[in-house]
Length: 280
Image 1 (cartoon, rainbow, N blue to C red):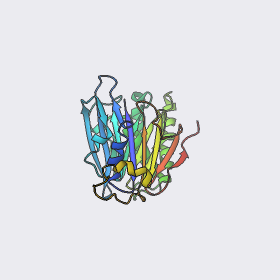
Image 2: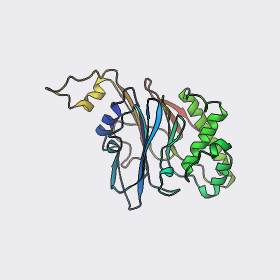
Image 3: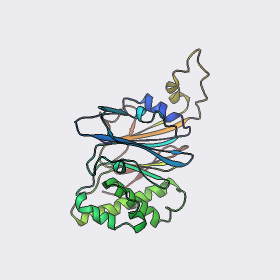
Image 4: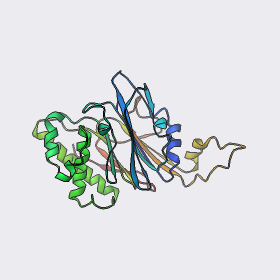
């Protein structure tokens, strides 16, 4: 099955610890013999980096293993069971354009009939940046077009509400094009990352978040700092927001479910903010 996970923290060493601590919730087990792959996108000194493996023969994938060598305070990961496009690096999420990263789960209905319409609706400079065959990459480019029309694509990412508004505009355009060929409305789970924030959209599959803040939440993650070990670092200022979707066994205990068609924005310093996506 496909899987989507992201986090944003105020320290770059917290993500790997949370991934290990939440290992059961963030492990994906293969249910059939079809191939799968995975990718991770993160920022280092403000620059977006990708680590992608288009094929992996393991029967289960753990986020903790995927990011064991990654040190970043913002990260998006994706496990892909291909429904559109072959098992290539260009088709492996996350996708990147300048300082924007995107990953999603779900499939655009009747994509074969829609692909040319979606592609042709893009300005030529965005058409040239499409590398793969997937519906998700074209949805990403609809978002980039909405940012371009708002004058936000050629500047550093602004407020997260700007991204939320552009994502809403991209979904409106997608649904309009779907309606032209009689396709069903799209129900996609999406994560968008910039160097400053995360933006999540829940479509059909369950999505949930977990907020950790302060010493009480983080002490269990530093269990090795017991008696006789090094002094426990100051954990009171620590903050991390974790978001994931498409769980193997339902929303884990202690997580807060995101509502259908809801957008949530995450920053390093504030609590998650929920925004309605589209009226249904």
